[in-house]
Image (cartoon, rainbow, N blue to C red; front, top):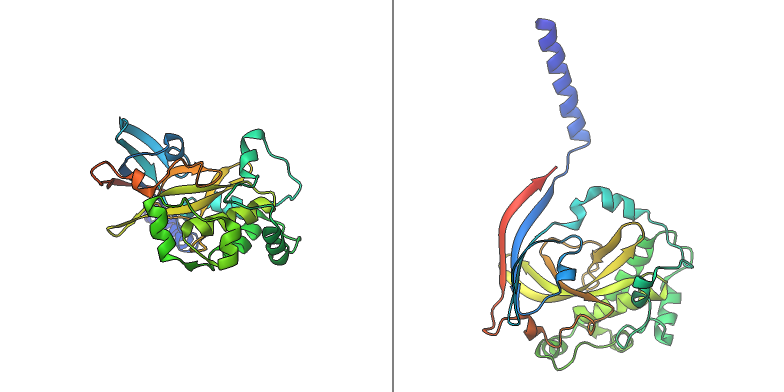
Length: 273
């Protein structure tokens, strides 16, 4: 009996030591109730979000329950994508072609974009993440334009083009995203525009960010305005498209109910190890 107890103590000591060296990470799943005037159910039900329930889907309101999590907690995926190879000549399936082409707002083939891309990319990049980091360094350097932000919210303009923003080096999250998309597409990497809401510590704001396509995985979100390579769970994706126009929202006011309200309600938190 004494030997068994001693062996058990030794085994426990080894386990504790292993956990100290290689701690178990938890993926925290947040279940959230979202309600807006409009949203894309396809976008809502895409990584890292998962559509759990459609509570209401009418002409005046869309209310759903989703689960989501911080991207960095998906440890194995982060590890895999970190080394995803960059192949400049790669060909993509038809469904991704529109995320490679220029639009009125994403000027990926313009002279200014080509000149910028040639100056920041060496041509020796081996991974997609290397391209992402260099593009984020540019997009996150824009100075925030408060007047433009109000015009976008009111629906006076959808956003400004990447060429215009590169000339002024001012903009909002939308313009930062347009520049990032232009640089990614210039390097033959599919990337798309995302519009949604950010709700953190009781404060809500509308926001735009980007998603980059990784072969064998799918869409991965980054924040061109802040330069972050991963997004937190409280970035709630409502629409995704080739640019802001394809997101189908003429004014950010459209996201609100007719009475001006919204629903963002975190309901439960689940820990997955």
